[in-house]
Each structure stands twice: as structure tokens, then as C-alpha cells.
Length: 103
Image 1 (cartoon, rainbow, N blue to C red):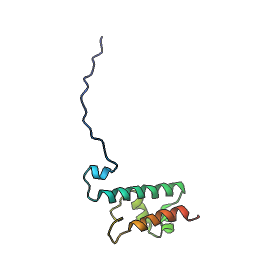
Image 2: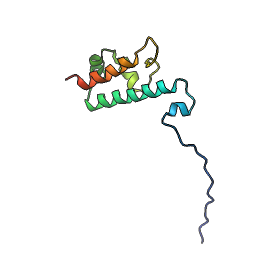
Image 3: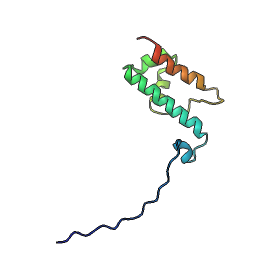
Image 4: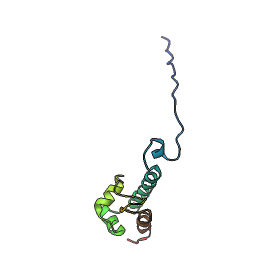
């Protein structure tokens, strides 16, 4: 019994830019990308240092629910722009505190 050859279909695709948020039409794409990258870095540091959410919150001077939100990428309460929420400098400070604070 001879095997049938499957027909190949042409799949159309687009090469993405460096910012997936811009590619899919999200408002404030640069801010969203920055928040996502910073949240990933904070998550990475917390895991590397084997911190609990409570300990990470204590070190960063924020509450545990904010740490949970960061780790679950619920970033609407965080800002790197002109907002009363955490500014970019404060976001970066959280990263530096996690890196530099001895346990």
C-alpha cells in the first residue's frame, strides 16, 4: 500500500518586531514591554534568592499582594510613566533592593 503525500499549504506569517505589545496593537506598547521586562527580572531575582512573597515584599517596601501581582504579571497597578502608581525609578529601585539586600 503506497503512502499518500500530504499537500503542503502555504502558511503566511509576519516577522515580529522587538515589541510584541506594539505588534498586537496595545496602547502604550513601550510602557507595557518595560513593565513586563521588569516584572520578569523581579520574578527571576525572587526565585534565585529563594524569597517568599512576604520576604520580597518586606525587602522592597511594598505589600505582599503587590508582589503576588508582579509575579502573576498583573501589572495594571504598576506604571513606568506619568502615573501616581510606581514610577520607572521606583520599579528599578525594587530590582536593586532585591539584588543588593543581604538576607
